[in-house]
Image (cartoon, rainbow, N blue to C red; front, side, top):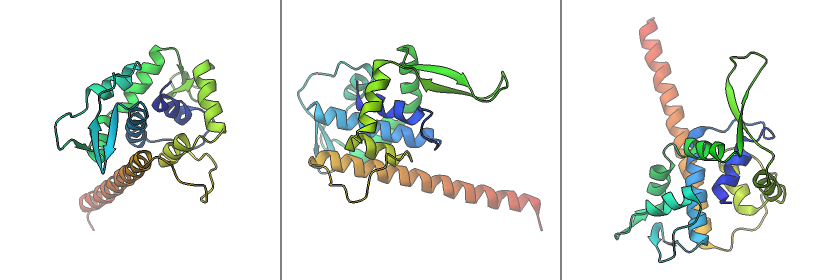
Length: 201
């Protein structure tokens, strides 16, 4: 199973109390895909650029789509640009794929029959594997989850990553999520100012 699918399952599992934003999760999923592609030697990272390699497309459908969408002409795509482009609505794509595979089930929150609907992971080998890696605090999975506000209980003094490419991608994910939060805050302030204009003195 891809790391991106593991991340999605961890993010929607009812265990974590924090609500994960779809935009944040989409950016982190794009980062997870890129790390999977790096580890499968489908791409390499040169500075802040994604350089396609010669390896075959991964068997996972969504990872395959990610690989097919790579920009193959120099100067190649920047990691940050990839996260925003590939990440657009990616959380919804993973939700649909996992539901189709029987890995997620829809549940209504609250007692009302028309309450808001959410998804939960089904107790499958996929979920159990994701939970095992989460409980073992697999470093990359834990770092991606922390970017979207799900805490794995990692300490600040844990060692860094051996792979420079992975470190570069993870840093880009954190930067992109912070940038998205800054955009949200700016819109909130602008909307509040606009509402005050209409209210008048």
